[in-house]
Amino acid sequence: MNARIEDLLAKYYDAETSLLEEQELKVLLRASDGFEVEKMLFGSLANFRKVEPCKISWPEAKVRKLNASWMSWAASAAILIGSFWGWQIYEQKQAEQAAYEEVMMAFALIQTNLSKGQAQLQPMNNLKYLNTTDQIFGQSKK
Amino acid sequence: MKTFFEEHIWPQRGKLYRLALSWVKDRALAEDALQNVFEKSVARQKELSVHANLSGWLVLSLKNEVLTHFRQNKKMDTLENVNQFRADEPPPDDVTESIQKVMSLLKELPEKQRDIFQLREVEGLDYSEIAGHLDISLDQVKVNLHRARKRIRELMINQKLAK
Image 1: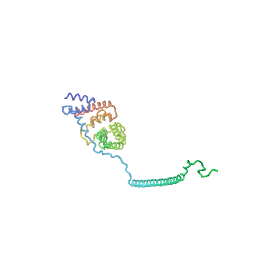
Image 2 (image 1 turned 30 degrees about the horizontal axis):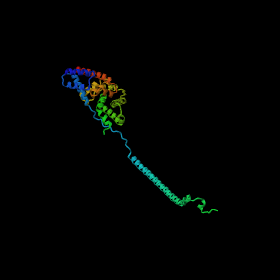
Image 3 (image 1 turned 45 degrees about the vertical axis):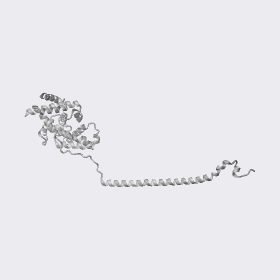
């Protein structure tokens, strides 16, 4: 065992040991006699590892605190602006609907009058059966 | 859901605290410096979540906090100067004798050797993790660790002989 310890210590002081080998070295040292310097060193280092901070507190992320009165004013203004904007849109839609209906009524009137005109022009269809314009107007040949 | 700070930074508090303690040899000062680093970390969580070397950033921020404190009070501009300045001060009273022994040994090492030795021996980091924490090469880690261990051994043998 001592030979293994000597070997590991040589590598340790040359900074060539892995963490696993250093762990093995510490275990072997605990079970062996002698090597007082290394035992003391590793013991002290192990104690130092246990030192922890006592007064470190969890740091809070800084959150911007908004003024509550300003927030209520801002909320009221937002509601007012929103209501006015909504009302404007409603009014515009109503005006568009009325204009549409008026245009449709005008189209209907035109359609009705156009049908009447077409009915009155129906006799003109008979022109194709007549031979001359005299016949159309019922004039006898001189 | 855990925040980035909760998951990746808060668990490092013990290691960072012990590093700061070995630099300043004052528990309250080490805690204040670490608290300041944590405050900054929380504020910069988004940026740190994509940082290539979080541990390195934390160690560097902690060093800067300590240096800022000493610059404001004693006009120190490197940790080496801080260490020399604090060298004559006894280790804190509220720690055990064995911890005082570690701190008195650490103060005999140059800054880089001390940090590497502590990260390896106390925190149990592997060579590449130490290189990341201190932003140095793997070779530098091994060379400095080798020197630090040899020096610590000499110091302990001398102390033993002196008794």
